[in-house]
Image (cartoon, rainbow, N blue to C red; front, side, top):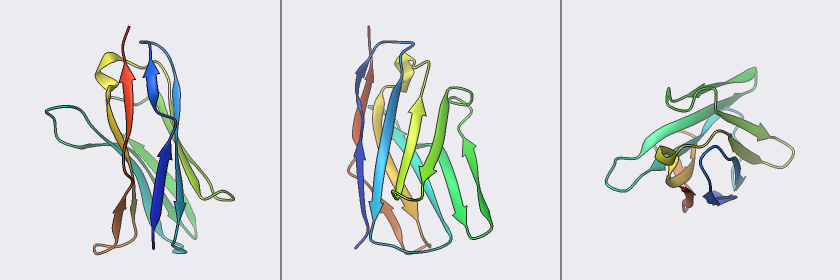
Length: 119
C-alpha cells in the first residue's frame, strides 16, 4: 500500500523559508514522478514542482510562479521528497499536497499540509 506523509508546513512571514518533506513508502518502481501540488482557498489545485525518477536519471520542472524560489529534491536513501521554499509570498499560502504518479491507474496523494504566509 502506497503511503505519502507530508510534514514541515506552518506559519511563516513574507520573505521567509520553509521546507516540506514527503516520506514515501509502499512502492518499488524504478520509473515514476513525484510532485508537489497546492490548493489555495477558492482555487483549483495546481502543480508547484515535479521530479521524475528513472533508471537513467531524472529531471525537475517548476511552475513559473515559484521558479527561482522553490527547489524540489529527493533523498533516495530515505525515500523522501523535499520542497525547499524560499522568499515566500502571501500568494504561496495554500494546502500543499505530495503526489506520486506510477501509472495512469496508480496515482497517489498525501493528506495535505497547510502553509500560511502572513505578517
